[in-house]
Amino acid sequence: MLPADVALTPVIESDFQELRRLADRIWRQHYTGMISTAQIDHMLGSRFSDDALRTYLQTATSWLELLRVAGSAVGYCGCAVVAEEPQSLKLGQLYLLDSHRGTGLGRFMLSHIERRAENLGVHTIFLQVNKRNEAALAFYKAAGFTIRHAAIFEIGGGFVMDDYVMERQRSPQNAGKMRKTGGQRGLRRDPNDWEIYSDSPD
Ligand SMILES: CC(C)(COP(=O)(O)OP(=O)(O)OC[C@H]1O[C@@H](n2cnc3c(N)ncnc32)[C@H](O)[C@@H]1OP(=O)(O)O)[C@@H](O)C(=O)NCCC(=O)NCCS
Image (cartoon, rainbow, N blue to C red; front, side):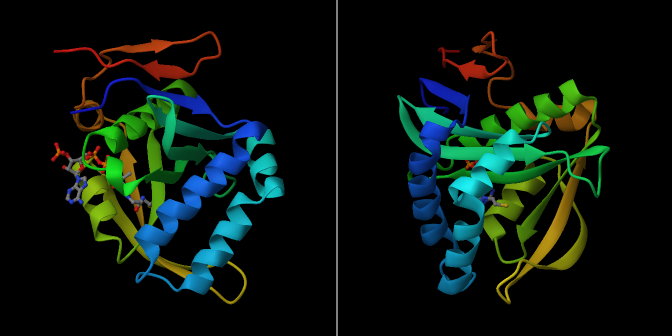
């Protein structure tokens, strides 16, 4: 069951340090054994430097949010409209501490991104996932994503990502999969258009 007192809020500059620490913890726990430590260092360094985060947040078509449970940061998600596929929304990041997995928080963040796609009038959400990331593959498949193709992406420093590209079309059937956890129950919008979740008993 989704924990009580869950909130997704946009990352701001004063969150950078906390976000970096959180990403560092999640990535080292999750990706060790899947990719090399050198590659983890490289990817964390290139994605979570102050400059990289500022650029991400200053772009009008990219979004990054921190997930808090009872005030503590436990995950984050990000998405963007990217030049190579402007009619779609790219789900770039979806990460939770291992202690908080399996309680619906991943689906909660995915629903948030789906609503952003709806608001943008975008019909396809796509993402990249490491071919060996079996738990995430199972999660995305359960949410209605299918594999579009396999691809190797060069990411600098001599490293590559050996990924599947997955996609999900917006449809009433898939929307049901995204919103299984409580649907709109407990969701409200604050004036800045960020969604806050307060769990309430069924
Ligand atoms: C991927 C991730 C965000 C999913 O979040 P989560 O909170 O664990 O997932 P949920 O509890 O919302 O699960 C939703 C559904 O996905 C499926 N699912 C989730 N984890 C699964 C797993 N390990 N194996 C099989 N199915 C799984 C289930 O169908 C589940 O529904 P159910 O609980 O009703 O059976 C989270 O596991 C995570 O942070 N993983 C590590 C980081 C990562 O790999 N991120 C993706 C990078 S591309």
